[in-house]
Amino acid sequence: MRHVPVFMKIVTCRLSLNNKQLRKVEYAGSANAYKFLLTIVFNSTAYSVTIKTFLIWAMYFVLRLLKIKIVKNNMLIGEKMMLGPMSIELNWQLVKIHTDSPAALLYVPENNLWRIKPSQAESDENMKKRLFSMLHYHAIYFRLYR
Amino acid sequence: MKADFFSPKQVVLPVKYFRHGVGMREKDMADNFKPLFFNNDDFDKAYRFIEQALKSEKRYPNGKDFTDEYAKYFVQLEKAVLK
Image (cartoon, rainbow over all chains, first blue to last red; front, side, top):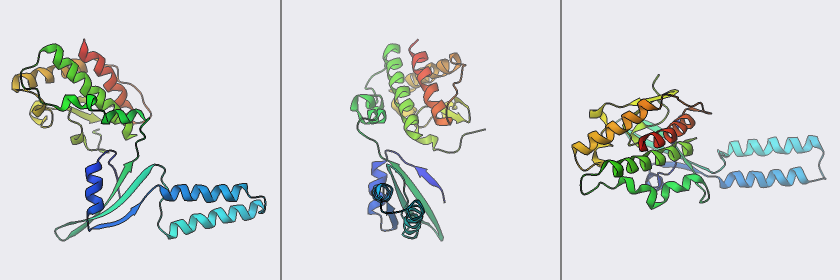
């Protein structure tokens, strides 16, 4: 089983969600629920340390049994693809990008102008500026990949 | 050794990705890069600018992982391409 990072492939995400072959969707909401339960257990004075430890392990195994993956700010989508007689399982990993994250700059239209093919030959200066934007965009893209 | 943990096709730049390094992709293999330019002359020019930037930036940065290093190196290339 291999996790393929997708990051901003919103179209891919939508396609996968509409796909009838979609097997399971697991999302970060489960992580919040787990954190919430942990907070209750840790803050409670009613239980001893042994009982608290037992409860935490019990919660962990229940989540494992329910096949809920705890991944912060990630969405994992399992997809079953049929390639002829072969069945291939793909696990897409989508990372949530916060609006205040530097990676959100990838969505700013001004940072994507380099994608537009010019209608005439470019001067050296303009081309260098466009290459600068291109490299800058990909520098941000690789930071997002991490 | 060539980096195989992400899809280089997602990145339009004519660059090959290695573990702890990047290099120029062959001109005829830069399929995603070529359509961004008005004509072949402009494509050649852009290819040359990136090649020159890559040659001038010989110091390859250290990072937490390969993609961190790529990000840092691309920042160096940004500056080099404007020279």
